[in-house]
Image 1 (cartoon, one colour):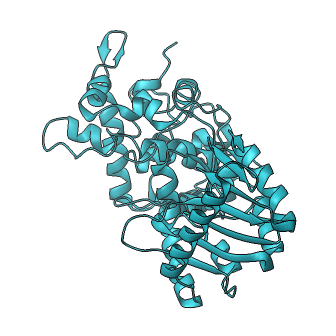
Image 2 (cartoon, rainbow, N blue to C red):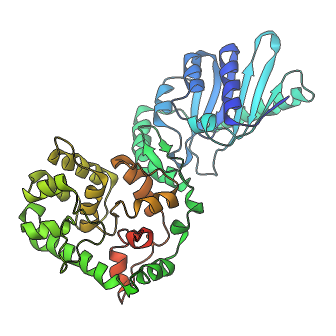
Image 3 (spheres, rainbow, N blue to C red):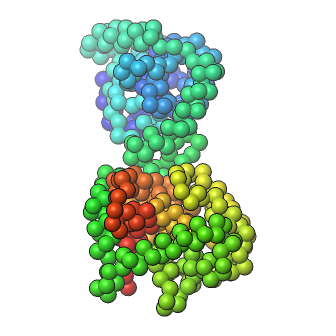
Amino acid sequence: MQILTDARSIHDCLKRLIPKATAIEAAAAWASVGFEACDLLFKHRKKIRRLIVGMHFYQTHPDFIEAYLSEKAVKFIMSTDGTFHPKVYYFAMASSEWKCLIGSANFTRSAMESNQEMAVLVESHDPGAAQLKKEVLVSIEKWWVTAKYMDREGLEYYREQWEKNRVKNSRRAGAFGRMTASEVVSDRGTAAIDIPIIKMNWKDFSTRVKNERDKDKPVLDVRLSVLQGARSLFLKYGHFHEVPKGNRYEIGGLVRDSYSNFGWFGSMYGAWQFKSVVSRNDKHISRALDKIPIKGKIERDDYVAFIDEYKKAFPDGGDGIATTTRLLAMKRPDVFVCLGNRNKRQLCKSFGIPQNVDYEMYWDSIIERIQASIWWNSARPTSGPERFVWDGRAAFLDALFYEWR
């Protein structure tokens, strides 16, 4: 008997046993693709005698299901009667020997590469092994009877639901980072439960916003005037290219006049290439902002469409996360925060991520964390200035993380 205490050792064990086995019987709550043991299992799929995989919460990757769609030795379970949750891998070997791995690890990439896992490897010569083998195979037989084959129609339905749920499932598990075709690749930032700003309730958040001072003077009214002014311009003119040049400069944070407050939420006064495209009223800036609705839910796809169009205004480079997020924060301050030199260090430190934030990381590591926050998900206050703070609550992170010099 051997105790395996980490993901790598469990993965190594499976990689050794799959090619050597003469027959395989296994059951796992979930399975995914993109790791060596998965590739080996598919290569040796004719050895599979019975394999049962659960699909609860849409955690099993549809590509894994599709790979075994025509295999009669593979079934799936999505029963509503509790969650199918075993993780057991039985390998018949030559000369009547066998080995069985039982533990916490599902047949997923995360379980094999990054999770905290533990398993016990039992061999045919271990004390009590005969009884264990009997009970394991009886259980697999019981699960096999209740499991079902997947057909093409069922797979397509499942894949659609999986697409809708995969990011939600990852966020629920506390994973933030780059989204690939198969999973969310963690940015290894601080877990949501350990980030004070995410756990902060609305009362504490709004109090901190209201307590911000500039040389002992409260600045809430000034900040609110900027957000309300920008919104009025978007509502009045509809499209950025129809906004007068001076007002475009205000939205872009390109003004430095003493009478204007539009330097708040990220001054872009020194961003000369950005100023040039705003000055000449480049059509791609306006088209990019049209991708972001003035109200309602904003999806990642909306943001990606904005970025794709925005970059076209800078064929020779000169675009950047600061100018990009300034425009986003002015149009939808409830969703976006301008990430500039004065707030980036503290915000990224709080989230436990590096400061070299690119376009993809901005959404996946920052916006997704913001939208997991208690204060962000609070109900809109019905009266007082707090309701206007709520309308710009993501942008107001600047008030909490801004470094005064």
